[in-house]
Length: 400
Image 1 (tube, rainbow, N blue to C red):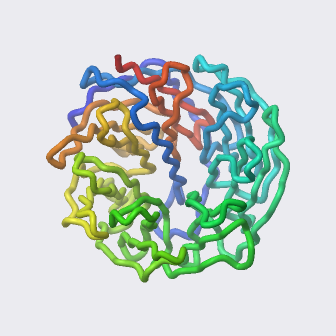
Image 2 (cartoon, one colour; image 1 turned 45 degrees about the horizontal axis):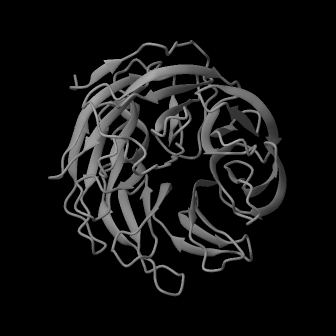
């Protein structure tokens, strides 16, 4: 029912029982709140064929409900490794990459209950990759300091009162600390500088579901975009010069938006945003992808419906084909066959269109998508984190 080229080789589907996950979102019966991870590698891929971007590159079985992930070189060998948030065991699992597309198990680090979002980077300034973990039920945001060799130790904890999710990293105003942000179930976006004090709190709508960072008004500062489930809105917090944020600008974003992904999808130099709206959720399979074209001044044109139908689970975006225009990947249940999740690939292009290119069969309940290079060829690849089938689906970029 949609014009995608299908690729299904290499991804095996398994039948697993589902451990219900409900983060307080009314109407969500099976999949709960979704983590979003976006890692863009601009210019990494060369332009090539317009169809058949990706091919399956294997499946990694990892029990205990993989909900989210992050990429980095955690053992210092130059190859991309993965960190995976495990929802039922309350741990972060490290998978060490060989630089050719293979992964072997590494350390497992215990964290607070229900880790749902991760980010990686050298947050402590020692040249070693660290991790930040948001634990939904544990009410904590935790800094795991990289110890080298793929090991991590708990270095700092930011106690929160209301179910954090959707971590993003911002540029810190201080060279000796880090700045991260998240949203919580109380309807706030929280910005923390090095986990000092209580952080900066801003109202972010009724039940915020996702958070993204980008410069939407062209002033060189990082702004924040938040989707909120219960009031069907996209909110934009424009950064002020003192490190704070202006009151949000509100945009209608469908019925129940769960994810937002920023990118320049039309090549005009202005940051756009795509929002995943679940519609009536599993009652009608009438979700939609909405494109908000940025005007470069902190506003958007009225949203354009890219696709209607299915239940959308997660988004990721970045320049996948090396044309300097961002592309989009969306995870969806396309039909009432709930054991099936597809990854839909759209190509950005001048003129404002996001063109459907490819459909990939992923595992069961792809809660997050990661764009990162793990095969050593310099091209951005894809990882799907499948919560119910307890697998990671790997897809290799085959553009030449």
